[in-house]
Length: 393
Image 1 (cartoon, rainbow, N blue to C red):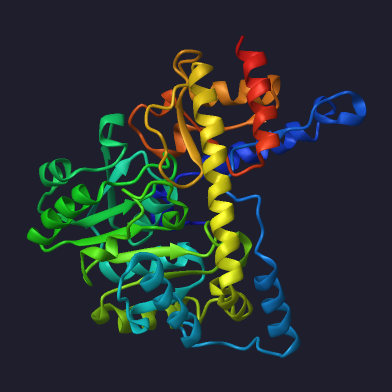
Image 2: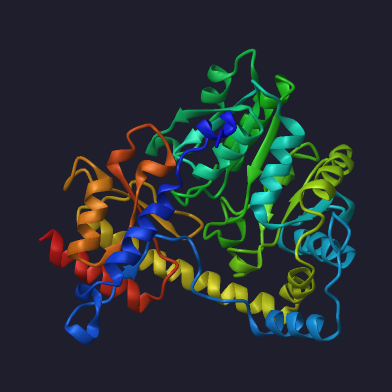
């Protein structure tokens, strides 16, 4: 079968390839406690171990029983858009009108819609290296070109205004940033983000910011939305991470008013609407009881970070920048191996701990880095750290 040439620019999702390998090892006798083995500890996937809180689950059940399962508007339930508007006001002090909020089938759909609406064939989009691999593939799917700019720990693994200005060329259309970032858990300082915005605006470009981990910020310095810069910013967010609704496939985007109708037209044709049941359930995310629970969970993620990062540093798996958000530690494994891909498979076999090698996240020295997800319980994290110490000794 002849395939479309755009697939040539979509690389395998190596995170998932590693997950498959880890699952195969986990099914072997070496990982079967009944046969004297030790279970595989999966610290490779970015999924909270918390599920949706009780009020959210109950809201989904009520929607099903009441038959509220038919299509919504392509832009989403008006009540949910209004609830998000109120959340921006209470959480970030921002006045974001509900009419600028579009509910999507996960943040992935939001990123696809943004790229299709804003980029054309041959356009260049600047992105940091390392960054989440699917983001550059959304750009490629729109037949634009993702240009990865190498970053360093001194830059917090993020783009800065100087790098954006230097890289900007005739084909550059804009930037796609993530703050906090996957895989590093680092955010862009608000002052630097403002300087980047000035460079982009001066060149009549567009700025898309992936903010799906914004709710999981641990430092007030960084826990601010890029939407504070003005209406021209496109912000992508999700109910998956902070709101613990990964499998519900529900996200949203905040766009300039002029972009709402084009995005709606694309969404009508590509997705019709996001899951109606998930939308009705998500209304319960903003109940005081649910918000209090999310804040307790955010504190727990921070405690897990404070457990994991110092321990990795002691083990010689240096984390050069303390993650200020999300639930990832980006660790340097060069003290033990010249290739994090081989090293991660060795750890799967010997320590029965699954981590993610840096291959997915960019092209600038990826063999040096491993990503550990601390989205699991502290008990599981402590066990994993003990095993890593055992093997690395």
